Length: 147
Image 1 (cartoon, rainbow, N blue to C red):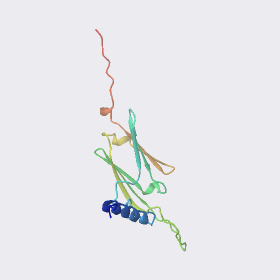
Image 2: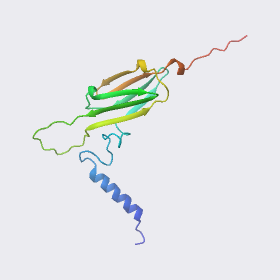
Image 3: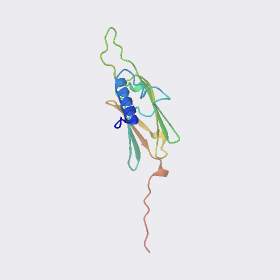
Image 4: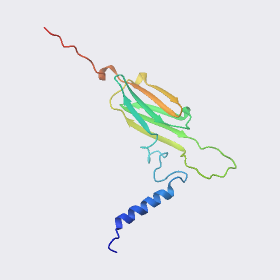
């Protein structure tokens, strides 16, 4: 028994259980479509900026743009929606890995934005959101005068 490590055995058991449940319908170990439980991981996003705007790209493949809702309040963007179940009457499922149901993600923005000029576009399963910076936070170049 000299080489036996309880913590290593428990970690291996946890990994085996995780693997056993991975890919079986909804992954209850990471329920990304259940509001209030796994709201942090879906949809995956990229957030970048330039001098005038912030750009948020959210991966939402297979979701009808009409089922996506965006809200902005006090420097926070909330993205929610629903991926509907694929109806397949009479089919036998051999794999069912894509999650379905409602999702919600809240993203803290680095600074305030101009709410009136936000633009959102859905293209090829990617939601592209342009968040303009207000004039008050844009960098202002000041010229130094010589006398």
